[in-house]
Amino acid sequence: MDKHWTEHDIKINNINLHYYRTGKGVKKTLILVHGFSDNGLCWTQVARALEDEYDVIMPDMRGHGLSSRYSETETLDMASDLAELIKELGLAKPVVGGHSMGSMVTYELAIRYRELPGALFFVDPLWWIGTPFGNPGNQAPEENPIATWAKTLQDIPLDELIKGYREDNPAWSDELIRIMCEAKKQLDMGIVDVLSEKMHRQEWDWQEEVKKFPQPFLLFSGETEKGGFITPEVSARVKEIRPDAMTLQVPDVGHLIHFDGFPVFMEGLKRFLASVDL
Image (cartoon, rainbow, N blue to C red; front, side, top):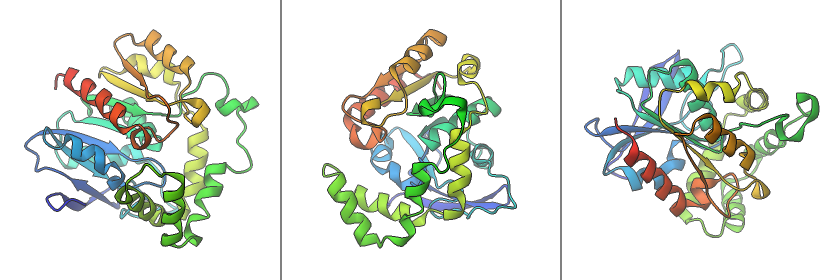
């Protein structure tokens, strides 16, 4: 974490939510919601690029980072956690964006708490047309491959994990690799199956819901051939439903758009933020 940033814990929904912050509430607010198995600091390079203009807040979502662990006696409701964070901090119409799991939390926030965000961006959310991931009958597999992978993380030493990430992602900085790997070691294994099931299920019809968003929004996609979720068909449908929305496919990357395609991602995000009147 950069020395001039701060980190805090806030009590909401009977849990402690940890978050990082680049500013002191003077500038416009931008909330960045991380993906599954990541933490708030995984947005570090994005926050650095925007902190001159924005007070950037990066929460560790429940079961991730330094936030409270998940309990089976609780209802997992990350959208409510995010909404309460916004309310408790007294944030007026922040820009809210997320990646993967975080994009779905942002999406749910926009559906259930549509008065809170001022603008939205979604980085490869799990929106599909037809059956999810080509799975007829909408039946969940015995175990999601992502869940299977996540459950191996606790048995891999940090140094070994770092070595593997460095081999798989040679273009990433050592700092980013360490941040990512430390986040993986912080993941609460008790939340994996719950999130896996929620990921597979669509509780709302996104094609109907995005019509209702009063906020401007931006949709990022990668290439499905490289592991991205958003297909060209989905992007085209978004533009058909909401001609005012911005869509951007980042070339030559899969799901990890803001890591693998950082320059193009940032160019698109800055262009969107400049167009938003908050």
